[in-house]
Image 1 (cartoon, rainbow, N blue to C red):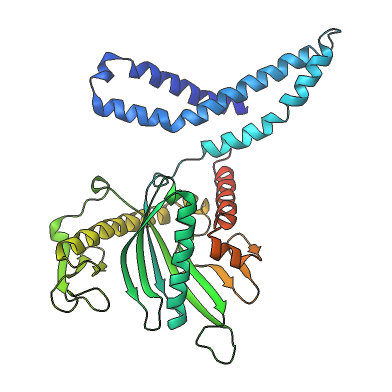
Image 2 (tube, helix red, strand yellow):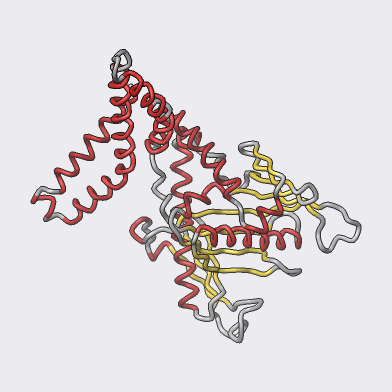
Length: 355
């Protein structure tokens, strides 16, 4: 039964091979590119499917030899090696058969904002940004600060960064939501534990062809930058605010001294946010897709608690609690949470797809 589900992928892979060698396709660059991408997307699945089928056939052949006086013992040894491989291959194939998120291979914008908790929340934005930066370093990704707004007592009221690297979005997409911290603030003289919150948004970076924003749909305002930023602060109208009129999405950037550079940055973020809004609307319509996710990805959803007195970190969506908060925060060991999140999402998607 499982083999029957695999054969169509193998057949399609071989069909694409034939098509790519056709003179008609060779002269059509766009079609060749489309077919090459499709082939590449199923190549790993086809490789595992062929391995699974050959293993099933080898098991059947060895079972037939069990009663042979000369080869029976050898067949028994081979079966002991082959049979445990099937469940493992089946699990790997099921994961590969899950419909792929088209954004998984993209870079991403991470937006962190201070929420409830005032100054302490701004300090936690800085701690969270350091955590993601350390994790990005471990993964070999590059982090570029796009925009930041400092808090009155340190930290950041807002931090927006671009994270570039292979699989960045696939690893961090479940970080969207409210992150709650419980700890004694540096300013607390009585030693009382305070609760603060930070909102995190993970937004895939998009190409111009993926989102169409017309010039007449954008309102641009310029103003003088405030806070730290060099000699140009408060002397020129270098800061830029873009408003996407159809959705009401607003992006303000003031980090660069050049109005042109601020506008370019703001435009890229605006396109990413508009794309995210469209993606969210599609998810709302497709309830089955939403059920396959870990939580809704809604920024208002409390997803995780960081309890410093107990050295505890809890992800509320999957009920995971680890007593290694200091290790995770100081060393960027976010994979301790991300890997169980991904495994949980894959299990739900496999069940939803009836695999």
